[in-house]
Image: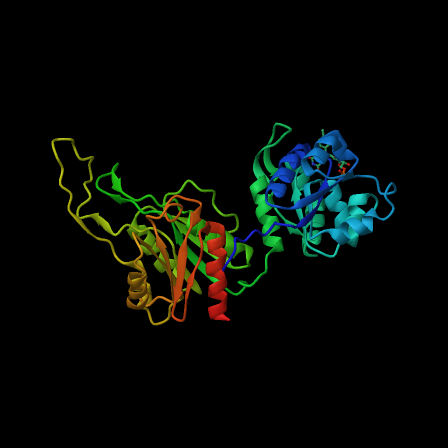
Length: 396
Ligand SMILES: Cc1cc2nc3c(=O)[nH]c(=O)nc-3n(C[C@H](O)[C@H](O)[C@H](O)COP(=O)(O)O)c2cc1C
């Protein structure tokens, strides 16, 4: 039986907090990491103490906060040895300069030198400091040694100016930590994913759509990015955050989605069609808003079937489709797999509680040409990883 995938569960995170205005955000970062099951040990620089208190970081982490190199003689060796990953958030221009040049003059920089795992840095500073060519040279040098950078973002800065320098949002930092701790088994794949609903217009303001939120496709996109794939996400209308690192194509109608899939398909190795593409569209779209003058009878026609079109091509990517069915109609899903020449189909019963549209969970059966894998009710994130696991098994 497959289990929920919790990348941060039981991970030991060594968090460096340095002297930038974003240091107060570290409390929230620690809280979120602990919610995901990690234990966090904090090292504060002396300058960080001007921006956040040791007490608040101790309370948030439920752990001792370290700062002085000479008060705990073995901490610079033992703390890194016990850590699965190092994170420095916020990372000042100063610490980035030191790390890039092998300087070890405080507990944090010395721990970095003795650490053997991955380090994620979240730079945060005024835009002038960020754009400074000496800083940029230091940053490039540090990244060339395998350090992972997340952010900074463009926006209004604490100094009242606008520019690039704001620390990455906490969910992006967490995503980057998860990616750094994930196996990279999809490095050779370029995955095209469709997600969300389509809109089929009756007139300029009215349309037929469905309850799809895009959650399943977005979860697959994030999981694939973590595992090293290049990802293009074609999405219908959705209120979800765009996955950082994906090539994002926004579409409206099923015709837009068909066009986008056709444009991207030839350069993709895998196509995952998790979008809820409307099956029907109005026979005619009125150019003006239809006036309210009594009952209206709609005539609908079928939209083009995107998967069947792709399945018929001589050279085509590995195709994964979704069968959102009401009731236990696995037989129908299996028939679809063959008829549309797909390689895998994900069956889900959308009428079951906690499964299908607009929920964070899903209960699916992964059906491919060789086997049928029934999964329990799981978060869509874990379902996404289970689908990608089967994909890598088949393509091994
Ligand atoms: C009010 C104030 C805000 C600062 N904010 C930042 C900042 O956001 N990012 C940064 O790189 N440096 C910032 N600095 C400068 C650092 O605090 C300074 O370079 C310090 O030496 C960093 O030490 P550390 O890297 O050991 O924490 C700020 C300084 C002051 C006085």
